[in-house]
Image (tube, one colour):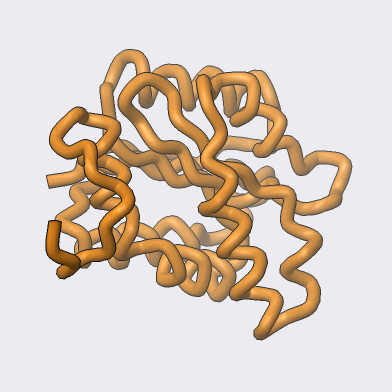
Length: 168
């Protein structure tokens, strides 16, 4: 089982003015990788608050995988990537590179995403867009690789160079 946290970053969502459809999509999709959502919260686009929640989810709750949704665009209040960069130990740029690359094939606006992914301790944090369609599309692009990344973080495997099904 992969212990999952979901942090929805939305001013309107945190005020109850908008339903969080993106968080629900994440909850449903992580079931495909034996993910169990153990933490879920909606907070406003406040850098300090985002950092505090990420630190809590990793350092106190010790969850394996944290998805943020929202706050990755170009608006002045979009600060999720900056908050994430301040709490991670290492970046995992390939995750968002492939998401942007594949999403660009569907919408040219994908290149405007500033989302990042990285590791803090034994947790993987992945920023996702705020739109439900963007969340679904983004997770589906990287979903099958995530369990292997979690296994590596947890020290359960060290082989990363082999494709699944490849002989050793």
